[in-house]
Length: 161
Image 1 (cartoon, rainbow, N blue to C red):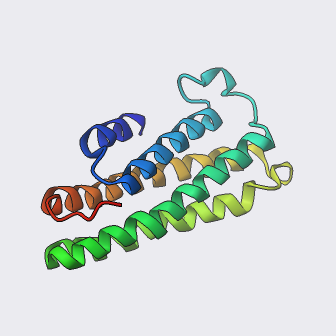
Image 2: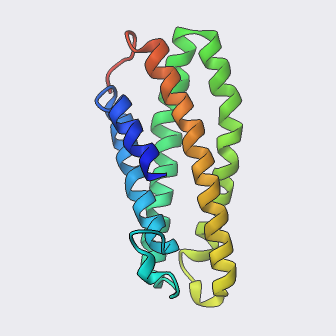
């Protein structure tokens, strides 16, 4: 996941400030996810349940990322694709419902864990966090396809943010 965001930043960085900001948020989200999951380089925490504060911070980043994507980047991509080509608009219309699946999973995770981890079992948390990680990985790939379409096909016509 982290390598993908670095590649995205190298590829599309500087092309649109909304995308730059969004990719920065993605990077923060991935780092916090790895901390919660106890993934390298944070594996020393692997066998302990994350604190409620860490989970809450992660959930806030997650909600910020989803909001930025939905209200800033997707809207902009769809608008630009509508202006510059029906093929691009069709891709956006096709990918958006697939991205929405991970949104629903992320919202459920937030509802279940942001405020009251103490009522949850650690096994359930680990399974839900793993499912969320897989959904985010798929989401990032879909989002990158949208960004790529906007950048490649319409880079000469992109309206700066």
